Image (cartoon, rainbow, N blue to C red; front, side, top):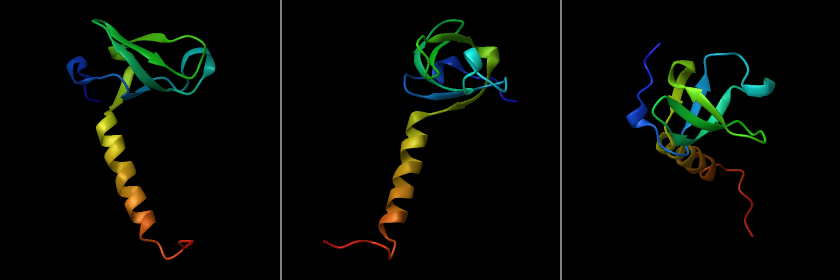
Length: 86
């Protein structure tokens, strides 16, 4: 497991926790709201945001990587033969 680097994290990035479930039994994938010295403030789709220490983060997914993979997916889908023409 690679160490998570705080300087590479930005608002909007996704994190995956080392635990199977997240806070209050939610999913273990959250969106970074703010980067702090000891961890990140993350949104897990609950009423409150939670401060997650860096050692509890298994994976860090950059927002730009997610956006580019979505663009590739949209371009592939756009070239499909199943398009409806108006």
